Amino acid sequence: MTAVYLEEGKQRVFACALDWPGWCRSAKTPDLALETLAGYTPRYAEVADEAGVPFVVSTFEVVERLPGSASTDFGVPEQFATADTAPLRAGEAARLAALVAASWAIFDRVAAQAPAELRKGPRGGGRDRDKMIDHVLASEVSYVRKLGIKHRLIAINDYSAIVGLRKTIFDALAAESDGNPPVVGGWPPRYAARRIAWHVLDHAWEMQDRSIP
Image 1 (spheres, rainbow, N blue to C red):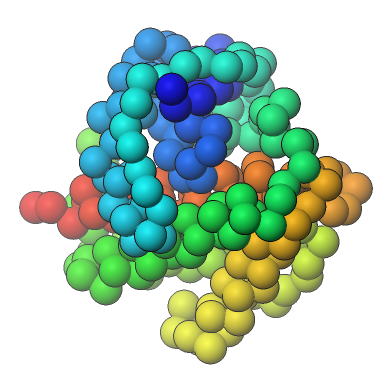
Image 2 (image 1 turned 180 degrees about the horizontal axis):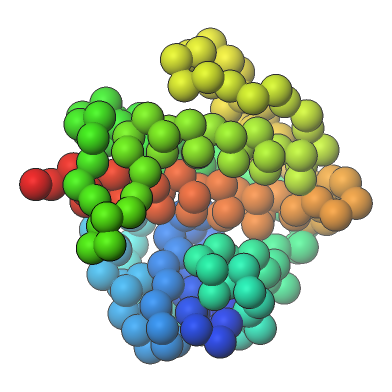
């Protein structure tokens, strides 16, 4: 079984694979969220392949239901699962960090192939490529504070700084942990890996879809 938890808001539900950072999709109902998650299996398989992590598709088992919030309805999975605070051994931490790194690699590859101007959404909205890259970088600078790390904002063409930021995140996620947030008000490493990978892949897949004429 593939363990999945549901974060249920009033208008949106996230279905997230507990042990696969970034494999997390949303819809209006729990059933539709699970169906959407299943539909992204081939795309997530590319992430696991990039990370060198064996990926076997199996039946979903909903192991926890979490109450959502306004953030959930806005489109952000923000709740910690109970399992997120379990001790994190070195081998599992390295696996999670590798999947996050694979998400970055896929994002970079998609961005390199995407046109500067992306197809607009049905209401004419959506960031173009460079604005999306900038948004992802700025978000990660914000996210690392939840791991007790401070980092300056980065320009999208400051490649050495991007590499440095990602190494800092990778090293923090790959470290053995008792499972608790490293700072007051911070994120447990398991959740941090899931949130960071989800955000990166969500925009990578959006960029990919909006590159199609």
